[in-house]
Length: 202
Ligand SMILES: [Mg+2]
Image (cartoon, rainbow, N blue to C red; front, side, top):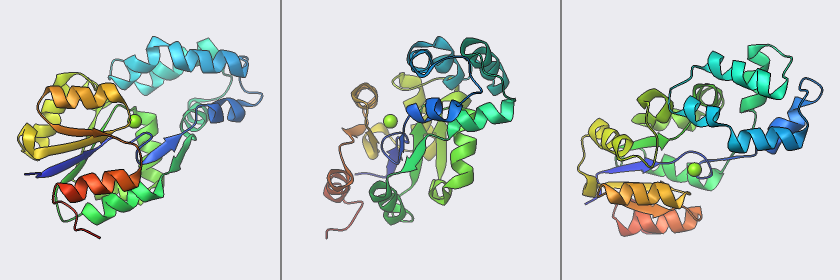
């Protein structure tokens, strides 16, 4: 029986577009868009930041040097974070679930992004808990972060349903015994929640 529902954030509830960083960079970066995207795709500093091994200011310092960024920290934080757009159909499912079953966010993310998103989307307040990689100092698909998520909502693995767009993160959840599905679209997610009895039919 499903007693808790865990949501991934990126590409499930909010889309994001790294190219927006490049477009927004304008004249405040020495790096051209190709170099910027390559840095975003390959820099180990991003996974270090998202696993809590770098603070926001330390990460900014690495980015400032790598990209030749000439702005202040606050300007970098905005450039780095203004990449998200809502996926309203999935957010609607969060609103439907609220009060029916405990819900939580289980996200690999960083402090700048969470601060940005919390300030702009009120659905983020609906979650009963948030399990965030940079705070937990571990990330999906490591078993540890799923175990912490289960502990926070006090449920057994088989009682927890999880949705994520990345197959490796779904596999990580399945490996600890959770019920997990890959995100394709909100309609399929809704069907999965109905079939588990946490949303009504129709
Ligand atoms: Mg995702």
